[in-house]
Structures are given as C-alpha cells and as structure tokens.
Amino acid sequence: MKRERIYLSPPHMGGEEFKNVKEAFDTNWIAPVGPHINQFELELQRYLDVPHCVALTSGTAAIHLALIILGVESRDEVICSSFTFAGSCNPIVYQGATPVFIDSERNTWNMDPDLLEEAIRDRIKKGKKPKVIIYVHLYGMPAQVDRIVAIADQYEIPLIEDAAEGLGSTYKGQKLGAFGAFGILSFNGNKIITTSGGGALLTNNSTWSEKAKYLSTQARDPFVHYEHSEIGYNYRLSNVSAAIGRGQLKVIDKRVEERRAIFKRYVDGLKVIEAISFQPENKEGMSNRWLTTLEIDSTLTKEVTNESIRTALEQENIESRPLWKPMHKQPVYAQAPYYGSGVSESLFNTGLCLPSGSSLTISDQELIVSIINKMFKR
Ligand SMILES: *Cc1c(COP(=O)(O)O)cnc(C)c1O
Image 1 (cartoon, rainbow, N blue to C red):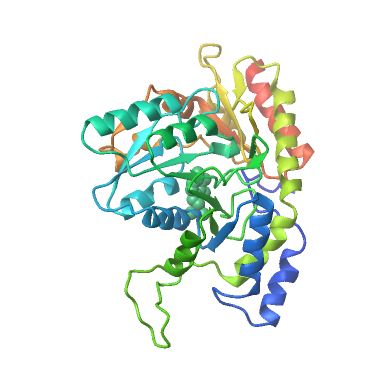
Image 2 (cartoon, protein in one colour):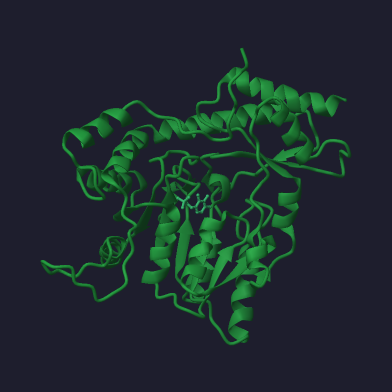
C-alpha cells in the first residue's frame, strides 16, 4: 500500500472540537454570533494574558482592522517586515497606503532593529513619518521585541505585532501578541491551531476592541433599522469556527511541546551535516517552532541545495517548502521602498521548511531525516 502524503503542517484536532460543533448545531447558533465566540475570546484573553480579544475571520482581517483603527489612510506609509507572508502587508494596500519593507537580522530572522531605525529617520527626512509599524515573529520565533518597542516608543509610532505564526511562543515569559498597540493571531488551516479559517485581534484598549467588533459586523449604528455612518466589514468569526477553536485551544501547550520536540529531533538527526543550520532561538524567548526551518551553507556543499532536498522529499510524497519569499522581491511590491542588506533574500535562496505538523509520527520523521542524510553522503 502506498504511504499517505506527509504534509508540511496539517490540522491536528485535540478531541473536543466535534462535540463543540455539535453543540453549536444543537442550539442552532450557526451564525457569526453565539456563546462559543464569546467564550473563545475569554479563553484566548486568559491564555495570552491580554485584556481584550476580538475573534475574526482571518489574521489578515485583524491587521486590516488594526490599521483602520490606528488611522492609516490613503498615501500614508506603513513599515513592515519584508520576510513574511503577504497577509502581513496586503492590508496596508487595502487602505491605499504604501508599505516600507525592512530586512531581517541574522539572530532571529526577524525585523532588524537597526534597519528599522534607519528607515524611520530616512522616511522622516524625506518628508513623511511612518504611521504604523507591523513586525512579525516568523515561524513562531520571537523578534527582538525590546529593541523594536523602544524604537517605536522613541519615534511615537504605534506597533502592530503579527503573531500569526507565534501562538504559544513567549518573550521574557509573556506570550506573544501583547507587545504592541495591537497583536494579531491566525487560525488558518496550517497554523499551530486552527478554526479551519480565522484570526483574532488583541489589545489593551477597550475602546479599540469595541470599535473592532463594530467594524467587523458592518458598522451598524444602534437603531432598530439598519443605520450606517461608517464603512464596515464582514469580518466576524462564526460561532461554528469558534467551537472548533475552543477545542484546539485546550491542547495548545501540548502542540507547542510536540512541535518543539519535532524541531529537536531534526536537529539531533541532522547535526553531523555541517552545511545545515537551523533558525536560531531568541535567547530572551521561546519559539513554538511552528515550522522547523533550515538553511544550507552553499560554501560547504555544491551538490545539495534547498531545492534538491525539496524535490527528493517530493519524490517520496513528502511536502516541504521554500522559506517565505521576501515582500520586497515580490512583483506586486516592486515599487515599495525597502531598507536592507540582503539577509532575507539569502535565507529565501538557501532555506527550507520541513514537515512540522504536531501529528508527524517518529517513523515518518526518521524517514525524512534519512532521506536528507543520504543526500549528503553521496
Ligand atoms: C498566516 C499569516 C497571516 C495571515 O493570516 P490569515 O488568517 O491566513 O489571514 C499573517 N501573517 C503571517 C506571518 C502569517 O503567517
């Protein structure tokens, strides 16, 4: 019998999800309103230790609402990590604003604080102070939070913390998502936990969280009829999805442990190969290791590349994937300003994401490790 495909990061249910969904059906709360949404928000607040949470249809929607509430408008500039998924920065363009991309540093692969400061100074000199900074914790690895927060404070620019990949990761003991004017999460199908599709907006500010709820439900004014004085969005999470999310949140700590164990097994299994290195851990934090990501040192090997490993795994019906292609290298963002030294581009050229789903079996992982080891022995 042919072995089933090994996916990069498939959904992994905890056990209570279906019971919760059935309960939503039994009570007929099949709507973007209902008790599971309210409970899911409370449970996220408790887990993350943040005062306010708004459950939404996606992480991208959460970033969009954060930008609106922070007043980003047409012709504004918004700073964003370049090494990320397009969901981080597309909402900047939804607002008619311009993204300004910042390269990564080598220590965590996230936004380089020195380049951030250089960019802010240069944009101010050119006549426009950036309105907002969006920074990302890529693959779940905490960015250099203290330095980024200090620079944002110094220049009085609000921060949006894109923790879409970092649920369960910590920085100085605090869960990610609490280090900005807004934090955002994603519960897309490939993330560490999923609602099949969904996201959340986190904030300390109750006025802002109320505003986000209002905007996410088509901005209805308090009348019996439908009255609107602002443009709204249909961004609220459904009660059925929230029912899945509550089951998933029960096992989040277990999922973090499992993904970190997978990372450790890859490191142990591939440590004899000098040309392979992994995304370094931020010493002030802890990564959920959403995806195990490696880098090939091309000065140490000519034959084996990230792409040759990817195709060798694909031949065995195993999914792996290149690292995120930096936004400043994307055709759609070719015109956007960029501050960098080529770190994220070099990571893209030499890196690979390995199968990292928490349901990955030890024997499947041993197979992956042995395929890669064999390639270096030839
Ligand atoms: C997944 C992701 C998003 C967007 O989340 P969606 O729920 O898919 O809209 C944003 N930023 C990063 C870094 C992501 O990985």
